[in-house]
Length: 100
Image 1 (cartoon, rainbow, N blue to C red):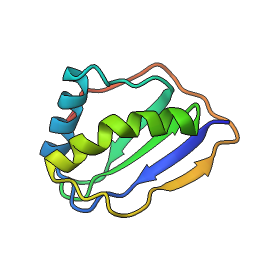
Image 2 (tube, rainbow, N blue to C red):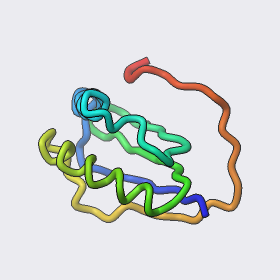
Image 3 (cartoon, rainbow, N blue to C red):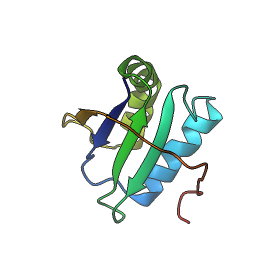
């Protein structure tokens, strides 16, 4: 079953978000298998991230690559993310570059 996960890191800036994305791409970990949607929103210094995944296992596998990059960037992810089962979804092929 698909799942939605909401991350509320403390004080994440646009610069941190962009740097993390670049490191994940450079390492061949972005976009990860099983990720259906990724949205970063809010204002710099208070960014949030929501994602829809095909399965919890796929998200947990990606987290093994993500967590060290977050720690290296100084992003505080000490709080537990909110995880919800997804009843249904529709995704249109679209994307933006960070900062657009």
